[in-house]
Length: 274
Length: 293
Image (cartoon, rainbow over all chains, first blue to last red; front, side):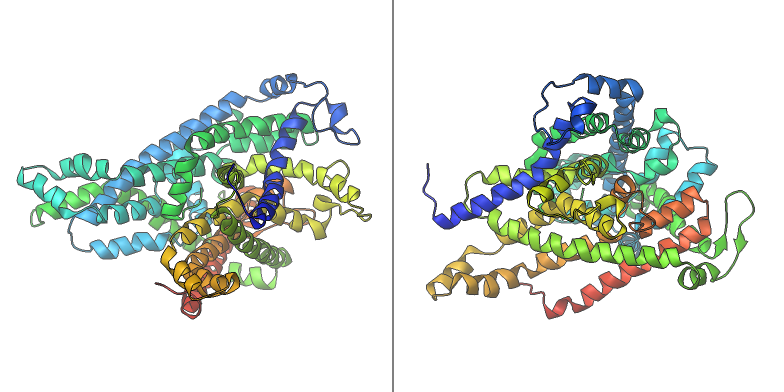
């Protein structure tokens, strides 16, 4: 045991209180999810359910297509992330590595769109999705979310830091631009690209408003919309609601436990919110 | 195309997928949205040009909008300072050598990545006036006049603010930690040699050198707080009455519940204008308090 000063232990005590406040809601979620409805309203409240009702989870699974919601969230988040990485990295390559007339003005225009809140473009995009009959489809969930300037900006900044010499050498050997992009720039940018990938995925996984707007059919709901509508149906069946919420945070928790260090590093690198 | 240099052609090939998408879903959408804000359109009948009347109606003849605007400002003022101050304090603690440090860091950051919807569901239960955990705690602490939280127009917004601070304080803390780690150690050592107290070191070295991070954290928090939606949607549905109705919620209702596309677009542009103005002012006045090394 290392020796700490009393000041450190005071701080430690405060942090224990903070950590408790952060974790109690999750514990309460889990605890409630395992109670029979009678115990949910018991006074005083019990922390550990006397007789854990795992069947609550089975009930949720029976009343709503929970697996389908997860699958939809996964397909949507995965496709948006993949497409965004391809499209944004190509554009960033052009902005960072190639000369063409109007380049800087166009880049500035891209940057300017970062200030426009998503709600401004959401309405026209909804109208467009409706005209294309893309409501209740994966393309409706995916395509309008692929084009954001942040990724282009982040990758462009990163590409700029890669020394020119790398590509000069390749060019003397007769490499094409595509070769330089795919074999030199991309492999050297793995940290920036993986950060962008994680954040895009988490952000889209948690996105509520867009899927809420373009999806009506139950079978096309994402996890967030599915949870919200389940709450609408089972407003006070707290044990079932909490069982659904627990299942709703399981994927994020697993991702967090695996990628926590990377996620925090990514935030400090980019200052981006997930 | 013939006269163009090869590099220009290649550049446009690389740009094409992004540019086409931007043309439709971003640039086009922005222009379309601005034009819509001068129209009445229910998506069934033909759109009708109405000039500035949407904007005029919002400010002169729509009490709900003014309330929603006020609620949003209250939310911003309630969340941003708490997130910034608590985030800073946590970061100051968590860069120190302390037992269980990585556990604390992980704990504080965990709520940030969880879907707001799931987090709000449990908070709705915690805030339950009769059986909720929070009122149980307050009761044990001897509070006799227990708030009705989500059922009370005065307390519902407080509840949403508490949830939002709890959820996102870790994000500010992580940014501050990065900022603190960027302050060169030699400065602290030099100050100690000069006999500076802890207090002086904090006010004269840490805080000024942290000001760029502070600026960034405030700007980001203000922008995201103005766009609050998920918490209100799950926790209160904007109620009771319109007590927790926010700008984005009002846009959502106007556009996607009542199909007043023009009116909703006008609100979205007002939101844009507010965010732009507030951010602009912050950038303009940063010179007064932000120090860059």
